[in-house]
Length: 466
Ligand SMILES: [Zn+2]
Image (cartoon, rainbow, N blue to C red; front, side, top):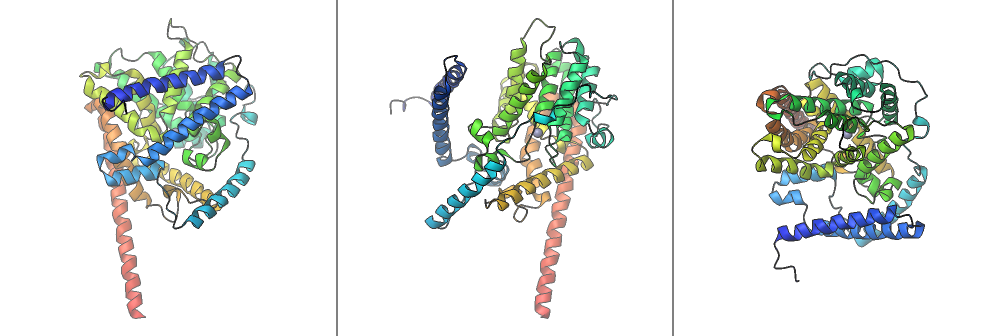
């Protein structure tokens, strides 16, 4: 009541301060030498309670992207990141559904009690292998699918090519051999999912590098980036989906997966990838972020990588993009943009950046992601759960239709912001691919519609004949 006189901005600032304090206290308690099991449990319960309350409040109010009144976009974003509410026809339905989910989830959880990124996946000592130079500066020439076919180690090929080309060995205190072993282990942690696999890791590392390299080469960005920034960016790209289980955050939360419990339902996978990465670095004892420069310390670089990984949660798409558009609006020169915000944005854009690739590669990625989505939908159905809309092979929109939405509502605006920083000339080749890919899905959607119309007409004619 007493806060009614304050502006929304004031309240928001106060909330930010409180949230920061809450987070600090939470970490201080967990790290405290006197914190025993009981204290830790109580702290986690408090944090979980707070989080659940916030979630309930968010559910009651409308989702932030629905405010702009663009209903098709809102519908699409709900499809993409979940958050849609299920409708039940009666109370009995609800009870039945809850009982069923509880039973099935328990069984599934028992089967998947352990999800470890490491275990037997550590490479045998000396499994370095050789690396041929990959042309990481070429947008048209680099094809990670071909690298996969030829080497089965696309991530190592891309990462080590960048490492050598940019002489990161002179900067990092880790030896080239150590780095090679680390990247081999990171690559081995990726599962053989249709989409979230080592090829995707290689692709995201390559795109992150390419965007970084293009930005750094622009006259108007002279001196903006250091080689430490590059080290941070490519390492983030390489580890960003480590040990991905092949299903999304919503699924893990809904099935009360151990990872969802551990990370309190918040950016579950992204926390998991980051934690796995630094557990591996520590376990292998590779000082990759220790460096020869006077500052900043390795811990700071690690923190930046964690922030970048957390920003790859699709649910963060809007704030991550807005952070950069706000910076762009505030500063005349791209040089003045907050680098920490820009680097989060660059990794996120690279993560969803395949529509900027040539047609054949983009189409391949689109098919693979759909395959992984459908596998999740099948699993949901098998468990008796309602499949996530985009994962439901019986109800999902056609590939063309959903890609039109993805490229139009998600990729195009994000790319537009990035190209404002990069400059029109350097953006042109990627721009052309995005246009071409949008045209491809438009044609495909038109063909789908024509085929459906023909089928309907055929069915009607057959009906008349009978
Ligand atoms: Zn990814």
